[in-house]
Length: 503
Image (tube, rainbow, N blue to C red; front, top):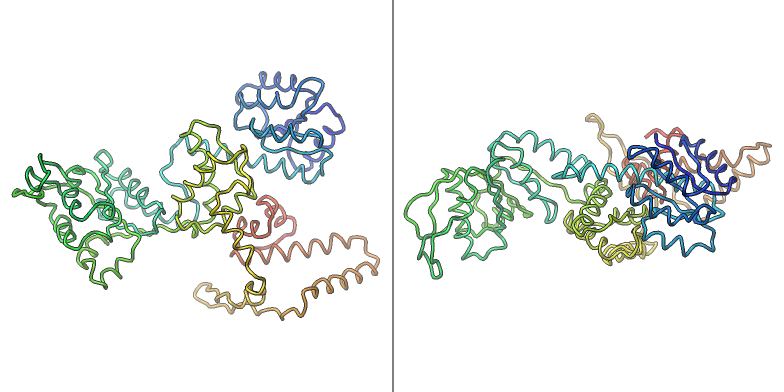
């Protein structure tokens, strides 16, 4: 494990941080001025150096801000924390434009300083993962179980020529799935041709799909190949198939049946060797019932169906996708990638994303352009995210169910075919301060008993109850539980281990 480098001419600061970090299992290395740091970097080489650098601003041997600039030229992704006295606050804030991870005001609270350094360590690791992912130019990202199911399905279909129907909300990434199916199929060397059937006027769509002969209609001055011919030997992706005009559905069905079609105005059959992948955000079964979509075409397309989850169904992927899109937007714009604070990321994770992954990508592009500092804070988020958070916070207390009511609404859990009864609701609390009264009574009893560990005992019980309640409401998902409690992911993991909580 790489050490944490501490740069400060004050021996007491170095000593306190060294001891505290060592207790956390984090190795350290200390320096008294920036010159020593740069010399050590030269000696360590590109593979050496720290995992986090913590530096004072004003030192006899040079400026911490100058050191920050030099570090970022050599190790652009290294998290750097600037320590500063309150009088140097303006200098510390200006350091963000040079890429500082965070500033630490002096005198600092030691536990908070260690927590900040731990966040910087995690950020450095995430940056390494993000860089690796970008280098590999991943087609799709997702750790959520629903996305893993999609990935497995793509793997199973890798060597197949079968027709696939992809369903999912707009912006959920259906075309990415289609491209992945093509890339990993035997047709990968052939063309991938995409057409949005809802975006082309009805009178032009037939020509777009099947092509036309010269003179077939006014303006047709030359013969033109359609998308089916262009996709010969490869894959044709028909997006928003549910909006295809009814009369064209008949022609599409014929092509899917025997591979033959006629250009508009043509008299000779054209044969195309094409694999068709279709996608829609609509309920095709309902469209069939309404008589606007052919049932026989539906069954022809619905050989294999892949459902792509909405982003709100895979919230555990929001953080990874956010960092990926921020990195990609920075590459596209030729600027330094921005980082996002944990509080802002938590607020983003709670957003509903009606536009799904496409909306998140647009938000990240907006933040890359519009966020004023290198670290994105809550106040920098776009209006739709801020307004959504404000609306949620403004809900009247009467609309928020009590814990007992919330538990009573939880459906029975099914385990190995057996239905377990829901937890019995706790009795309603008569007054808001009832639990505080109970706490007073418990504390007084413990204090009068002569114990000297009352603080630890009650704090441990309180934290255990809070974390257990949060894990219950999130079905054991730690990151979401931490967000609900307003604590960090590392904090809840450490507490679960310390308190011996069984999930």
